[in-house]
Image 1 (cartoon, rainbow, N blue to C red):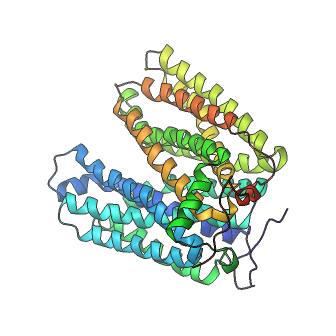
Image 2 (image 1 turned 30 degrees about the vertical axis):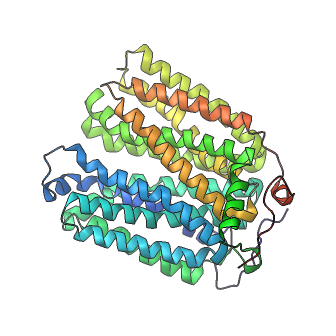
Length: 427
């Protein structure tokens, strides 16, 4: 099994090295940074746009970003299959910076949300191409381990971003929370230019003609393994988005522990990162197929415990019991997410950009919608979140067991006439 395909020079970071993984992790983190840095600035933003204190309309800045993030991946993935990862990555980062800087000049909430859609559209590029770069470079269990390591780093962003945002507010205006990620995008572009190797060589690039794009998309949606694991990832992401959206209000309103929220959120985030790291260690020992199946069983079991805690207590359990059950369940989600993404991408090396685009779009938008449903169902108790976590875990587990994951890559099947896509020539 060949693990490192593209040739690299000494001036580039070696695939699998800490620097290489750090670049990919930062690519994935750009989207999360664009969300979490802004959260402490919401009060100032409400005042700037003439909104009442506590007005929920400010959440549109998050919704708009997710719209751009979701649909943007459908553009960048196929383009990167044709023109290479690095050139397209530069374009996406340029759009990212333009959206962030334009948002800092917006004079109304509507204009700001429009800029956030552009910003999210730019953030979709490093988010989706990170998956494609890993698929270009690694296969099988090795890819799963690299994905878990990248995800563990990515999860640390929500821990530190709110504190960075608060620090920026202490230094100056709330627009600093927009300029900071724009600056990070510029630094990332320079880092990519100097150190990231091009992972898609010219002889593996594809046409962007309508027929070639349809063939590539068809290869993705007709692959049972890819579709099943994409659905699993969507339900797991739904748990994550509902957790992010519900945790603060649960801690502050259900448990009346507003001062403890940063500590609780940070402790849970550390547990989430550990889940990814442990999965990365285990996958090379037990194999991807076993890990996702055992992980799914554990996720359902631990989610059942959390749901029991929520329902049996009438939605108002002791804080220590709810916290303990959450610590038991949430790391299983971050252990599964990178591995379900790996399993979804595994059979599609020849159309990795298109696969990353479709998988990223479906999981991002679908997960955000599922999380929004849970957040809107909040009734002053933990019950909606705990029950949703169980339902989504069961749905993800069912998709995983229906996938019939193979232990070896099956990309060659895409080349069989009548069962997939024939090789597409460059224009």
